Length: 113
Image (cartoon, rainbow, N blue to C red):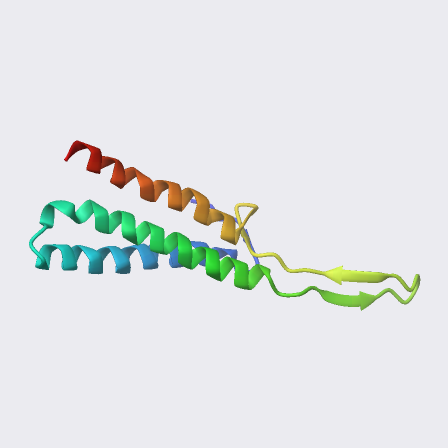
């Protein structure tokens, strides 16, 4: 698989996967310990929502840094240099939207209970 990123955009993958696995596993353990193992899909959904929130915060923090301002000596015009952090040409924080939508899918199973 080919990954294309700029800046720290590659962090989308470990932030989303790591947060989803850790929060989902902890939620699953808590649900099983409380006597509700049939609701582990809620832990999956919670893990994905937490991953979306964590990725949004990291992406906004990285892409929110102010641009570097330079003056072109030839024309005396101001030039702003901004480093954007992207994965597959999509800004890091916007990857949280499909992850949050994916978190809604396990909750659709609640309709069948």
